[in-house]
Amino acid sequence: MSTVDAQLQILREQEAARRESWPAGIPRAVEYVNGERPLSDYLRWRGRINADKPAVHFYGRDLTFGRLDQESDAVAAYLIGNGLARGDRVALMMQNCPQYVVAYWGVIRAGAVVVPLNPMFKAAEVRQQLVDSGATVAIVQADYAALIDAVRPQTDLALVVGLHIADYAGADSAMRTPFSTEPAADPGGVDAMWPAVVATPTAGVTLPAPELDATAALNYTGGTTGRPKGCEHTQGTMLYTAAASATVRRTFETGADTSDSVSLSYLPVFWIAGENIAVIQPVYTGATCVLLTRWDAKAVLAAIDRFGVHGMSGTVDNYLELMDDPEIVVRDLSSLRSPSTMSFVTKLTPLIRQQWRDRAGPHSVLREGSYGMTETHTSDTFVVGFQNDDFDLLGEPTFVGLPVPGTEIKVCDFETGEVLPSNVGGEILVRTPSLMKGYWRNPEATAECISDGWFRTGDLGAIRDDGCLRYIGRRKEMLKVNGMSVFPTELESLLVEHPALAAVAVVGVADRERGERPRAYVELNGRRETSPEELTEWARAHVAGYKVPEFVIIDELPRTATGKVRKVDLLELPTPSSVATAARAAGTS
Image (tube, rainbow, N blue to C red; front, top):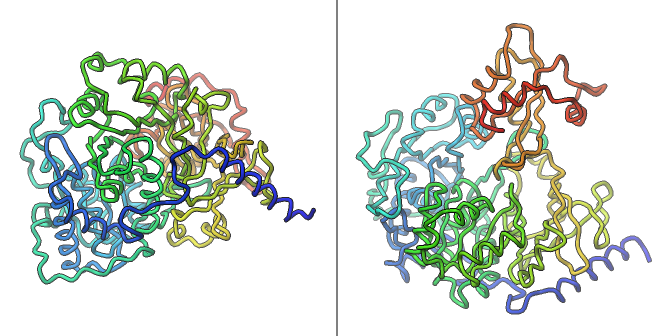
């Protein structure tokens, strides 16, 4: 048998195993609730048939589908009236709030491209992403207007819109608002404020025809080389993700009609996972999302009780905190049929699952989320249907299930690209309708990871005998700190701007509480003295808090003959006692 025939035989055997393992009741193909149409058309449809139904509930106030449809039109009309053209990029920088949802769909309806910005970013990080995306418009929470104004001269920004998130909140004593609801002064450095934008007349404004395959969002990720890269996603990739997830979930959550579902999300909307839950899925399914600006155990318990929440997603540590909260015994959690979790730091175990059942009820089975990444719009596998007798948790804590309908997964040799037999570890490759078009303005990086529609993830995994995927670990250098992505090369390029540093090499080290934490080994340039404590304070002012590393000052970084830093040698160096002190100062130990 030739090598090619042998690989085809492996793929056939693995596919046959998947068919055998497929849970009863889950369709084998994606089913679209209103056809393969742009999601902006879905919103128009929802605005008509579900006009008075809440799309988002936000601290005592509803944003209905009808209002979302109307206000996103107004945002589009305003942007077009101010010169925005098809394909232009619009940055959104705000905490979770209804305005983000309205702005997101308004930008897409204008034919433009959404660029989510992390509101935890500092000036250098914001400037970097604005410059790379070429954004000409920014819609920002007033709290960040001064930061945007400071970097604006170095970017292409021609228009900045400000907003106050409290404008869409109501009075709800049970849902503690983590922001001031008092009237706020208009911030400086903006060209217009949100109320004027959503009051824009739409009569006579012609919106561009929506396209399934045009770039609609740049969701930034990164890798082992270079700075974070923008993943070009389309309405088509978003639609498939929403449809595939709903096709799988509905059997176990809400039956035939996913519009009966109520979700709860506190995941940041600038994350693609938070975007899926709070922005995209409600428009696709017609379900309501209870949106919180941030994690708050008491607010989560109150929301589940009050709104009859069916599904939510959070870290294992979030669920542990819920179980420890005294209010859990007085809250009705009977609606929560589909709680999912992410084992970023603490891992989901049979014991934790049973403890959750004991508190929430036997109907509420805590399960892992799906395997995925920004490049594939996050949801490539499913694990629902594998929870009986803790099948998904016993033996292998990295069980990530089967590919969602329409997605293909194989495991290949990292070097040769040959398909590997079951139970042999190699690189996970994914081919899916939700795969990005490519990395923004980076054809070289795109060509390196996409071939014949297959995306090379850089992750290590294996196909089991039952056809399910076992995730082993990340081969990429990217770190996960409390679930947040940290890219060493990006961090290095920012830290080396410190006047005392000649060179920086960032590596990840295991952390019991956060999963991983960044450690920066630095060479001094001799121009002035510094200390790990001083470097920590400087980093706090220049990078997001979760990226602040612990610092180790060394005489010389180990290098290869060509001058590249040998990071593997750094991890073998003894750790000076000063690192612990610096870590405590940074809040990382």
